[in-house]
Image (cartoon, rainbow, N blue to C red):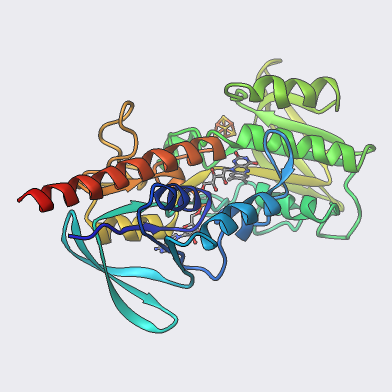
Length: 354
Ligand SMILES: Cc1cc2nc3c(=O)[nH]c(=O)nc-3n(C[C@H](O)[C@H](O)[C@H](O)COP(=O)(O)OP(=O)(O)OC[C@H]3O[C@@H](n4cnc5c(N)ncnc54)[C@H](O)[C@@H]3O)c2cc1C
Ligand code: SF4
């Protein structure tokens, strides 16, 4: 019987879970497969975070520091689990890290292995992501915004006309991703504001099916983008991106007016959705927990228990459970931390009384 909890994944979710577990007085081992903590926002160079625009790096560095400096937290970088034996309360996890293979005993596990961006060339190349230099994805623009330098990759010039195409890889029955990725409407609107601030002469358009700005994001970003920063929202479906001279042309249908449209652009930004990361798929198999039909981890007790998996003693949080913004992520991480701590303590009490 072990009172230790292992957290797999050192992104925002894993960091929040590990910190919560350690703060409750329970030893925690955090496994992160890459060399750095902070997860996708750090790996993909996110700039300002939606909705308020705080720089991602210092915020996540602070979260990481709170874990690495905690006396009850043991952080292992470049390390991932490769085998899992034992039972809830007495798991034996084999991990592979810089000094080879090692077995860790733990009472409970929190999975925080996150998501990956939809690959816009995976099913169809209709937007020309791999064909045209000036077709980029949300995270590519984030990286440019992080260094305050937005330029057309093809010629190094600042764009004069830039558009976002929403729902790329989400809400699409044809490719099997029927779900909404939740964050991309907000992130695109935030990036649109940042482009307008950086390049006031650049016209910015957002082509959408319907804008999904849930909760406070509606008044914090959506109306601000339109009324203060003159971002132009066009309800329409883009079916093709084509080259024309040294520009691109987006072609589709303006669904409000019910007529075809064709507009020249210097840059096209694809608002790609979220898919389960390779790590989420791999750890789901390894721990023998049930995935849902999209490959995210199934939380069978949702909505009132959104973090317990199909196996006792194993909890999941953040984007490993499905599309999630940072608030969702840290909330479910705190919930999973509490469940894991309660599980190892209950198990320890049962052991002591038997
Ligand atoms: C383009 C884009 C921009 C976004 N911007 C915002 C924003 O501005 N504001 C906001 O609220 N939300 C934003 N989000 C959502 C936000 O990125 C997620 O909510 C958050 O990253 C989820 O955190 P996570 O820890 O669950 O997963 P991740 O950030 O994906 O972290 C998972 C971690 O697990 C590690 N891992 C995976 N597999 C293994 C394994 N087998 N072993 C060990 N480690 C493993 C990975 O290396 C990674 O470090 C954005 C999303 C997108 C797509
Ligand atoms: S958040 Fe917006 S862009 Fe993203 S899938 Fe949902 S509706 Fe589409």
